[in-house]
Image (tube, rainbow, N blue to C red):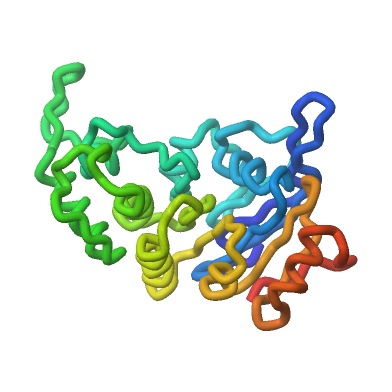
Length: 258
């Protein structure tokens, strides 16, 4: 397989009983590429993400990540391999502060004493500050609980995990759906920062303007299948909507990634 491909799926399928939520999804993303996944509600977008991040186990199909075939046992194993995901619900612990959230499940240990091990709070705080700086996220007080932060700040904290742990692939599921104009702009600037750093990103979004501004390529899902693979410079919003609604079909959607 091409060493430039960071993630590839072939025939990825997920059935829930008689419901075919995802069917034979072929997909790939290259290093440094930003790819949007679009589709109507129920098109299979989030189901696709849950399979590649091992939130669920796929019915069948093959996944390659970072040059090798993988079968992750769960999301933590996917994260350890280098896939960071920002889900719609953010998956943050409201009562914990920023460093505790970023290192939740991956705490740095200062002294390993079994059940009484001592955490290295200084190292976690310093790593958190580096991650926030890398993504240009400004949090005035990283020691305050997450519940005291705005929606935009919470979203930025979730995204900052990708920089803190040097992910090989970042996945964002509707990262600005519940944000205002100013907070949306802040998140989009973080995405541009990741692009400038050469990091690969999958963006699930219904926001056509956002997709056209931030992504190199658009993959459209419809009724659990990949129905289009479009380079941004060769398409427009009206064209993408036609694929989403089924008004237009693409007989050959294995466009080579840019």
